[in-house]
Image (tube, rainbow, N blue to C red; front, side):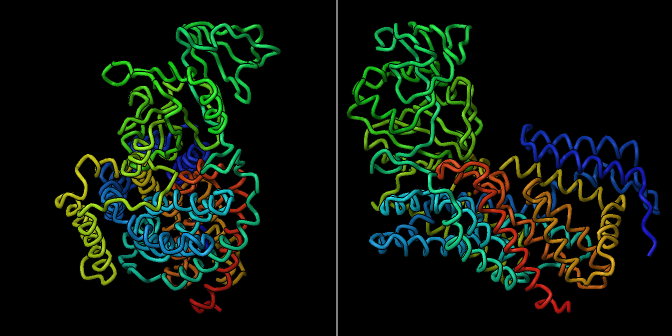
Length: 618
């Protein structure tokens, strides 16, 4: 077979895609900037280097490259995000969680396994991010009852949510994007349960791995308890102390670069006006007005405040958005310290602590911040909050308990005390059930069903317009739009056919089963470097071309794209739920590699053995 000759437009497309992969993987430039930059470059390049069809129409004109933002798959994903947020706002998922734990709190091991099964099932039908958010504090509480680290179950929690999402069409955005790209190229529709059987097979294999093997692989020192108090862990928080008149630290000096008056605390920097002092600290004396940025654990900070309540005077004396001073806490001994996670679609996401006035709704004040095991060396005023950040807060017991109903943050100390369920929760459950039912039966196309479901969530008061708009993740919107533009360019320039021919040429003489297995592994590797959504969009046209050239049903290779692109287990950036559990689990990047890579290999081998039998490729 004669190979397709590459054109200049094809090489340009390869170059842009390769650059996008590099920038997405480095994570030094925000995903939004990379996506917008990629899209802009494609628009400019193909304006001056058009690709014409037989009738003289530019296949990569403005309309074609921007068509992804109106793609039915993208609209469906955004609508499902709104529906998921409606479930969170109404507390519709909290009642089942309460029932599971309430009837099995005395048997935590059994409840943990039941929770993992429940998460896997729910994630097959709902965006898995809110599901994981609900179950994080439950898992922490159950592991605390066994006096074990929550890190042993939080990564498995994220992984089972991903595994559950690969079993139905609406289980993940990846599945919907592949289905959309497949329909655009072939005109054929992927139905709700078309890949459920192989998906369930892989999910079952993955469940066995995360419940039996993963806890043995995870490091045992993920969390170090200073006592038996819930969630007092070894993770380091960045804390800011503003020294005002009367503070006991004023006049204290460093000795050999250390500060004896701050035991078990690491001073990251001292800011004095416009002057900044960094380690090592030689002959530094704390002065009135100094701003100290230090790293410490929750346990150490609690102990220090109990011994020296005056230390809290002036802590985080930032200004709120109305430029009014926050009053210092007068009675620290009557306060309680807790940890909360910045939730997805939170009003805090993208704002600095200075902008929110260092306090949360209900009166709790923010003492410190921890971001995915990274030690930040800057003023807390400058830190822009992200979903998954852990905040150390202080308040009265009633203020802390009130955070359980705050949808902007997730209190990590879960309680079996029942939360009053909003009457809207039944509306949300009814809307969700209706969307799933119509989507599963195919009576109404999924984009229409999902969009109408999102409309009903807003119209019936399950959430307001502002909450719905926060649920629409701009990163997902721009990433998918850019990925679809790259996929369009890959197809129009002949790049997809060229890559398909090249891969087939590499495995020339091998069986279809071997080629399929290698294709799966390639995608599974790239999805952890790029992103699951972008990988899915880019490889779907390649999969269709490979299948056509090999003379097999395209669905064989398309389902490989679905499952492999969902194998985002090896990096915390691979999937949003991985980022959410990274802080509470006190994981490092290498922990995801240690547990995720074996899971990817197991799923690859399982699919390589199952798919040829299931699709009759022998």
